[in-house]
Image 1 (cartoon, one colour):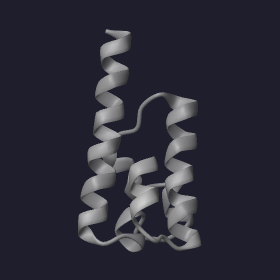
Image 2 (cartoon, rainbow, N blue to C red; image 1 turned 135 degrees about the vertical axis):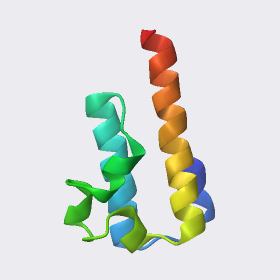
Image 3 (spheres, helix red, strand yellow; image 1 turned 90 degrees about the vertical axis):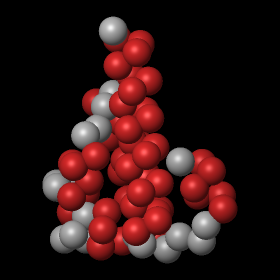
Image 4 (tube, helix red, strand yellow; image 1 turned 120 degrees about the vertical axis):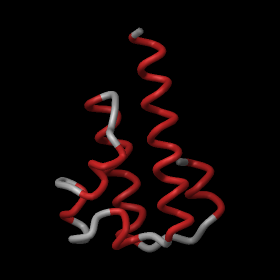
Length: 77
């Protein structure tokens, strides 16, 4: 997420959303990409990730989430 944050200009809600993802991953270890359209992520925007980011950014966020999930599976598997 650091790369995404460093090369794009995000508004406060977008930064908060990314931080929520990081907090969720820290607490739970994994995150199904579909969850980005559910609580707690819809607390910022009712459409979740799609309400805050353009399609390219959504794809990148999902790619990062999937990567983190795959790494967690490797470590626990």
